[in-house]
Structures are given as C-alpha cells and as structure tokens.
Length: 189
Image (cartoon, rainbow, N blue to C red):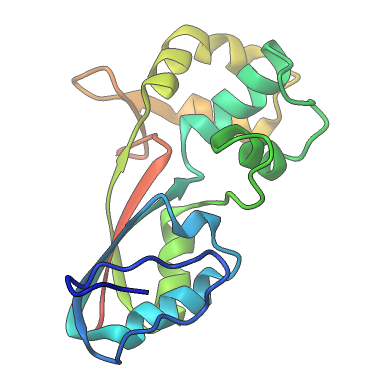
C-alpha cells in the first residue's frame, strides 16, 4: 500500500487504507475520488488516518461546469452526435471524461461534495475550480447557439444563461470558474 516515503496507492475497490490512525498530516488526490464506488468510505478512511488539524485537498469533477451543461449535452449529444441524445446526462458525462467504457465517473457540486465530507467528520470549503481548454473553446463558440436550442434541456439552458465572464474572458458561474475541476480543502478538527 505505501513505501518508506509515505506515498501510497489505493486500488479503486479498497475501502480501507493500510495506514495507522492519526499518522498523516496531509492527503492530496486529484482526479481520483470521482472514480471510486464508495467515496464516503474513502473519506472516512482519510479522516481516520489524518492527525487532528490534518488537511486533505481533493479535486473531483464539477457538476456546475461548462463540461456538464454544454460540452456533453449539447456538443457531444446534439451537435456532434458522438453520444446518444437519449442517454441520461450522468451516463453521457461518465462516457465523456475517461473513455466510453469508464465504469465510474461522477460529478459533484461543491456543496454536495462538502456535505459528503462533513458526514465523514470533516470541515470543508471550496478552494477553486479549474477549466479545460475544451470547455473554454466550446463555450466561446457555441454557448449562444446552445442557449437558444430547444433540444437542450431547460436545466442546461438556465445554467448557460447565468454564465458570465471574468476579466480574462473565462466563463464564471455564480462568481466561480465554470470548469470541470472542483477543488475542496477538508480539515480534521
């Protein structure tokens, strides 16, 4: 599970981490937990192995993103027809992120993920979002067309209508970058 440097690998089916309780100050995961079947169990293990005051920085896929609301449902499902338009958004999203056959790929809102972490014992807050080049390009080129396209569900069109831009012309939703990468910081009290 881990080497002498304290670096470890966790297999996607593991729900326990072979480290002593209270033995770590910091945990970082980027692009991992959104592929885990039982994220709550893993967060509970993170809580167990962290010392009091220990922190975890976690990046998961963001539901409040251009990827979720424009790239998948309009660009991939309606315009390009790469994914069947009848697929539910969570299934189409899963297929769009890490290959068609990726078995698990979830997106969370910031509040949703922090609530899951709180249930595991953590205090948490949103750190920021990262946005992909693909999202920026698709947003700049197709957002207006998608907003006016009645084939796109109201949920997505409402989200896209609320997107503004910052001083760098990057899409923002409710003051946050509207990108696929959601970063939260969790603290063990």
